Length: 163
Image 1 (cartoon, rainbow, N blue to C red):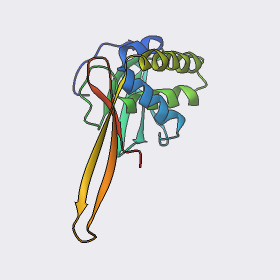
Image 2: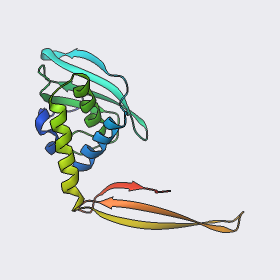
Image 3: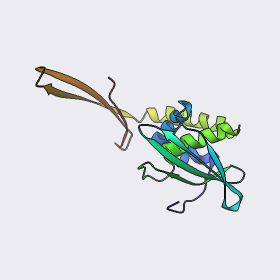
């Protein structure tokens, strides 16, 4: 692990993770994007779990959980995420790990994330960009719509080509 992080209570994880990261991590979990889990012992009686999470690319994620699996002690992901808090891939792996262990915290975490998603919708804006491209060989103009969702601070949280 590259840096020392403060441990995060699993119960408080949704509040410590960016809203878009949490929502997308939950979607990756629900859509079965987390590969087979590999468990191992970590120093101090803690547990490590790692797996590939398949999004636009595949990312290798490793989590270190406390011995009671009630705190996320550290995480590492091969994605380019640089914000504080776990990335969406770490969230997906954590939810899958709790699911595999039959942990009662999973239901509460999924409920919290639904609440976050509902609360954040009021603060999202959607920009629609229309891109035009001329195809010389066919002598026609192609139209490409692009939707961009932004949070209250104006940061892009999602973009999609609906076609």
